[in-house]
Length: 242
Ligand code: SAH
Image 1 (tube, rainbow, N blue to C red):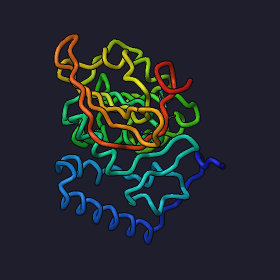
Image 2 (image 1 turned 90 degrees about the vertical axis):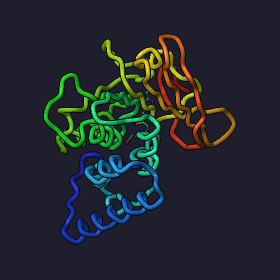
Image 3 (image 1 turned 180 degrees about the vertical axis):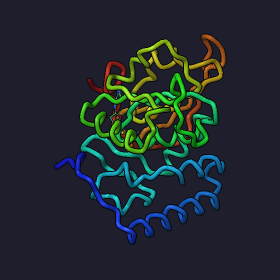
């Protein structure tokens, strides 16, 4: 499979018009079915997904489908990204740690929600995102940089299952790949009242259960199953494979 990570893609006026109208139609649909609160839909409208997908898929950027970025990585469907943000209870002023930067799209969406659309520098950055694959790390970082998100998103290369390398606690942790267990280092980096959302592979099925974990006290966590989902496998120390 050829990877077109560096190719520039020109979006002409005709295509831009088509993308805009599809984006707004999808936003209206999400509103109609009451998928998520308006603040999430407004964030979706602000993030140009066409700059995160591979050039081949630009014209499908606003089809609500997962989109392949490499053999083992996909940007989730738009509705899935929005639901993950809702389940993680994202809101203005909150901090997020995402495991699996991929294209950077979900990190950008999280950034739009927690900053309310501001891109002036914030320290420490409210969104932290980690990617284990060096090629995807470069891809995601470049996409985020081009759209000016690096003021508010800290992207690092490494194994996210081992936690963020600094002493930080997060309001929300979103794992965008499926593992068998909830990595202990991630539970430790949740604030009290914080929420972790992650797909859990039960073994033997081609789908996983999306699980929500809320830390309600120093050593007390409440776990709840949300829905059946399909994500790529989580790698790393606490993942399915190295
Ligand atoms: N959130 C991404 C897509 C996620 S696909 C987006 O919006 O585009 C899942 C990603 O998780 C892949 O890029 C994969 O390389 C990455 N990944 C898998 N295991 C990981 C780990 N242990 N730490 C960090 N990233 C990981």
